[in-house]
Structure formats: C-alpha cells, structure tokens
Length: 397
Ligand code: GDP
Ligand code: MN
Image 1 (tube, helix red, strand yellow):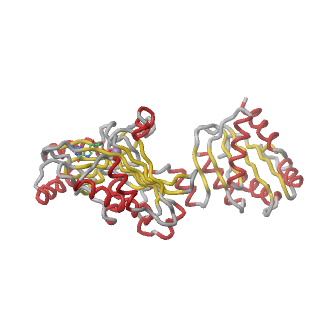
Image 2: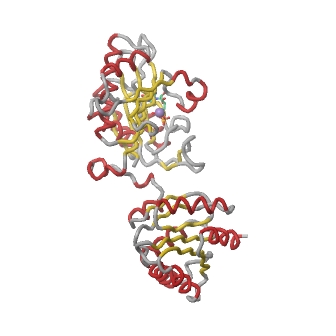
Image 3: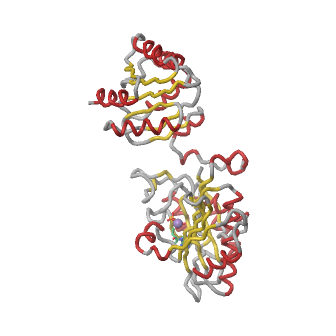
C-alpha cells in the first residue's frame, strides 16, 4: 500500500523528521484559507501547491507550483484540483487530482543557496538487509543519476543484529559534503528516517529532495512511501490512510472478494488456483504466443461463487478475448471445481461472450473433463497445460 506525500510526511514528522508546514485542501477556497493561516504562523507569503496523487514526477507534469500571493494560491489550486495529471510515472491518461498540499515555501532566498539531496530506505533483497541509498544529486530522477553518474550514488547497509550505527549516519553526512550544524542535522535526519521505515514496517521510503535550507536545517520536501501490506494488521492507523481512488478499481473489488488479482495488458484472461501455478500459466501463455490479461489466484476453494466472481472480474477488461482456467485438483477435487465452473457459467447467462478453455489436472481430472465436455456449454477442455495454451491460441487465431 502506498501513501500520499502529505501522509508520509506526517508519519515522518512523528519520528522527528523535519518537514515544512502544510495541510491538504480539496477546494481552491480551502487552499486560500490554509495559506492565510500559514502566513500568520510563519510570516512567509510564498506557498507551494502540490498535487496529491500516487505518482512521482509531479513537478514535470505541472502538479507542483509556487504561489507568491493569495491570488496565485487560488489560481493554481483551481488549476491543479480536478486536473488529469500526466507525469513520467503515470499512464498516458494520467491521474485525477482530488486534493493539493498547501505548504510554506522553504526554498527562501538566503546567503547560501539551498541544496537538494536524494535519500531512500529500502530492502536489498539480494543481501536481505535494509539499505539507505543516497546521493548529492537530489531533485532529479534517481534513475537518471544512476545512468549518467553512478559514482554519485552511495549506499549504506544496515546489519539487522545491531541496527543503524552512529558512524553510518556520520558517513552519510560526510559523503553529502556537510559540516557544522548541517552535519549534525543530517545525522539526526538519517536516524529519524530509518526509525520511521522500521517502525511503520515500510518496504520503501524515498525522499527526493532532502533539502538543506539556507539556515542549515535538513528537511524532507517530498516523500514517497510503500508499506508492506502483510504488516498492516498491526498498523490499523496506517491501514486507514489507504486511498482506494488511487488504485485500480478492479483490483480493489477483487481484493474485497478475497481474490488475488493483478491487471496486465494482454488479451488472455487467466483463472488459476495458487500463485505459483498462476505464474507458470502466464509463462505458458507467453510461450504459446499469447499475452496474459491478468494474474488471478482464486485460492483453495474454487467453488461456483468464487469462480463466478472471478469470471466477472476478468470480463470487466475489454481486452480479454479468451479465458484460460487452469486448476490443479489437490485438496479440492477437479470434479467439484468443474461443477463450480459449469454452475457459474450457467448462472451468468450470456454474460460470457469469449471462449473459455479449461484445464483440470489432479484428483478426478478425467471425470471433470467429461463433465465439462457433456455440459453443452461452449467450454473447451484440456488435460495438459501445453494443450490448453495451444487451444487458447487456436481459438484466438
Ligand atoms: P515530484 O516532482 O513529484 O518529485 O515532487 P517534489 O515534491 O519533489 O517537487 C518537485 C520540485 O519542486 C522539487 O524538486 C523542488 O525543486 C520543487 N519544490 C518543492 N517544494 C518546494 C518549495 O517549497 N519551494 C520551492 N521553491 N520549490 C519547491
Ligand atoms: Mn520528488
């Protein structure tokens, strides 16, 4: 699960990370009210207005703008709220903006120019350790830095037995070229950020840019967070921050039905019991020259109700030209699953307009195939996966 920038920053703030003052608004009028209050608190009349969507690169798409007075706050908020924001990280149609963060401008002109750094905390899956990745080249895409100046990216791995050590935080501040007050502030920043990552059971925190203000404060100006879904049961407060508007509607519906579904961009719908089998099925479809439209694991109980729900979810995708059902009958017998498919199909009347290929393997597979073949429905059956995948290609060509 991902958080919005403002939610991530509030979370960071609880762990002692410095953030600029700000709040979210859903209307231009509300944005102006917030900006007025901020000016009273901070004395600064400049504000930054930032689209809150689950995608980076908002600045490039016109979703982050500076307002120098209240009229501009209203104008910019009016422009951003409700827009379809297209950034290098969204699809071509972009994401609808429902709210903006109105925050004090912390890039105030001073004796020294503000500096921008990059910092993220994530799991290095190769070593199984948490890692802090950082760079002096903040504000720009880290992918671009990695490509053009890989020597400017540093990493610090954390030993799980002892946690983040003081010398590591100091090495980070040193490599970022800091000294004096800013050096101390950076070591504090690193510890607070790391504690937030561990405390929230996050799988990633990315702060780009980390800002050094002209008065040597270190703060998080941007914040991207991914939380580990498997840990949400022990973070009820964080689970509540979920914004379903940011997620694929079909994936949300599938999740609520207890189905493990991921939408893809091919044309062969897949319904499978078991995640490993689902991946193998997708591989077979590819090998036979097709392209999977989704990943769908119906789980252990492939009864009529679940199968029907799964069919309905797969069929919401207009790109689907055929559905491959691949069931391995281990604990659930194939004949029961076959009955589920037949019942679901009959129940759905003429909602199913694409060919269905069913492959059943395992306990009572032969009986199950007979049931399908004798059902009178337009369902093709197969025993081997290869046979099934080839049949899909046959009905499509
Ligand atoms: P992103 O484009 O989605 O990564 O959004 P960011 O939060 O990183 O903002 C994009 C850019 O806007 C930053 O790299 C900064 O250069 C700039 N920016 C962000 N906040 C402020 C601010 O308070 N004042 C000024 N002047 N610029 C800002
Ligand atoms: Mn950013």
